[in-house]
Amino acid sequence: MDLGSIPRETLALVAAGALLIALLQAFVAVARRWLRRRRMSIRMVRAARGEARAAAWLEDQGYRVLGGQVVAEHAVQVDERTVTVALRADYLVTRHGARYVVEVKTGALAPRIETSATRRQMLEYRIAFDVDGVLLVDGETGKVHEVTFPSLDRLAPRKGTSWRLVAFVLAASVALAALLRLS
Image (cartoon, rainbow, N blue to C red):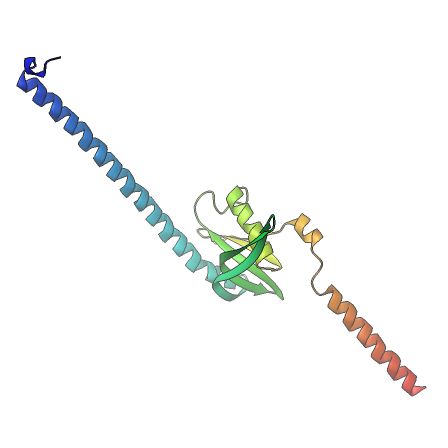
């Protein structure tokens, strides 16, 4: 096809149309990036608000906050290689002598244990922080949920059992020694 046979006005119109389409595509790409950043920013502000309120909610329910943004590391063995993984939880708290790691979640899905990512995170926290339990706090409603993993708790030895046995044997030995001195 010979471009010289096409009227200049038609060529200009086609070029303007192509330029308009390219500009629209660029605008749509920029708008999508801006919207994605804006949604992420709103989500982060919402999460930060929920996390800030959670400490007061926990204290209202009798928990004592030991620390915020607490870090734990645990080792994961893959074949012959050990990988150390660092985790950061929102809070570490205590109540009635038990220690809990706390994760605050906001939004419609994240605060629900049915959400697989949340459930996996709670399980990893339970293992890595070596605590008595895990608390999941809904950062918008203030509800505090204790998350337990019964099969995991059955496998783990009870804390303090061996010390109780040692204390009992020691007390029995002292009592027996005292009885022998008296006789």
